[in-house]
Length: 274
Ligand code: BTN
Image 1 (cartoon, protein in one colour):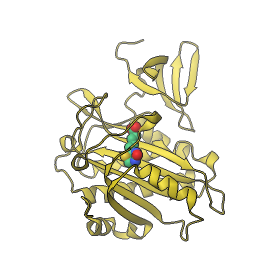
Image 2 (spheres, helix red, strand yellow):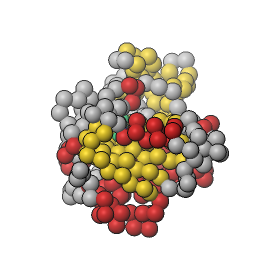
Image 3 (cartoon, helix red, strand yellow):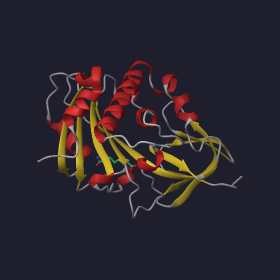
Image 4 (cartoon, protein in one colour):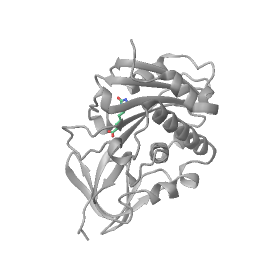
């Protein structure tokens, strides 16, 4: 079945990085993350662990988002894919990886002239227009137990980018078409994202999040040094001034009792809170 992705054009746009990826495109699947996780769990060690498998689907019937939420995206209006990475690192050294990938995504979209992009802890990419910010893309990183001889984990990083703002979301949503002066063709867009992801993964594997990526991430953090609330299922569980993230990518909030670190939740900006 034909898909919306022009795979030869993608290979060409990947240029010297083309050999680093094995790309598969599907018209429909349940969830690209679920498919690659299953593959990671059931396959013996890959013949060439340096190659990253990329699975792109025009449509997902059970796309999943963070914290068990569904990720609903329509084929023409979104780009959804997952990347499988054989991490050359032990599980204990993967903290902060998903934040680093957010940085890669922002940098890739900027190649096409997108401006006013921000990251929101932990994994959202936002676009600010006319003073209001809206979600442009989301990242879901999942780790598979491994059949690798090294014992290192396999990482599946799933990305959903709104090309056009979706309707019916419970959160303000933006589309890339409104943030870019010239909307890129989807193969060119995916190539740029994959190349930036590969760059970040190389840096992460060499130096880790804290040394090489944290400062750049914090410079783009929409809530940096801002009053915020942290929510769990809509309930406020903490509030304070956001002081960025620690070496593991945990959120740091300056609360009444001092700085506390948080591992999970939904961050909400609270203008006027002190
Ligand atoms: C979020 O913001 O909640 C994360 C959304 C991640 C969605 C992507 S779409 C491709 C990949 N496959 C999935 O099932 N989910 C991720």
